[in-house]
Length: 161
View 1 (cartoon, one colour):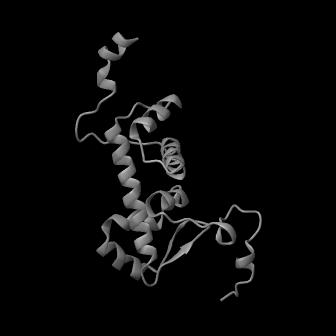
View 2 (spheres, one colour):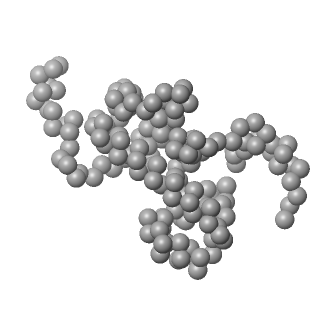
View 3 (cartoon, helix red, strand yellow):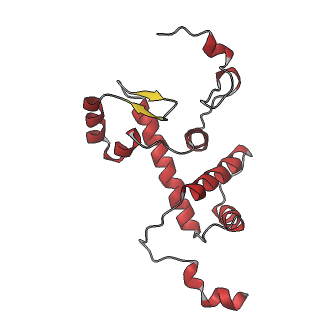
């Protein structure tokens, strides 16, 4: 009831500076909801995302917490893309992490300390995040992911190096 909500309003807000931990399941649903909004050509409504997350039974989050989570994943995917664009860095689609020798990685981390974990922990939902934040996604004959049952025609024509 309304009285219960008023009596427990502290559950809806968190003190400024409080760190909010997200489960993988919450993050996956959050990114999926943002992705669907973006795919429909709509702006991101953190109020609607908050309502939808709550309807799925996830913890109550403030709109600011949702915005912070959105910003965190935007920084993370942009950092990954920046690293993948540097000399001497490849990408393993199976593990979804950068492939680079230790010496080059040490240089990258020295220049970008926030990148340290990207070499060992894959960025969850990377394809959706690229679409959301970088407006990049493969379609048609150029689309491929490790889980696909067949290799796209364009890839089967490529020569092995």
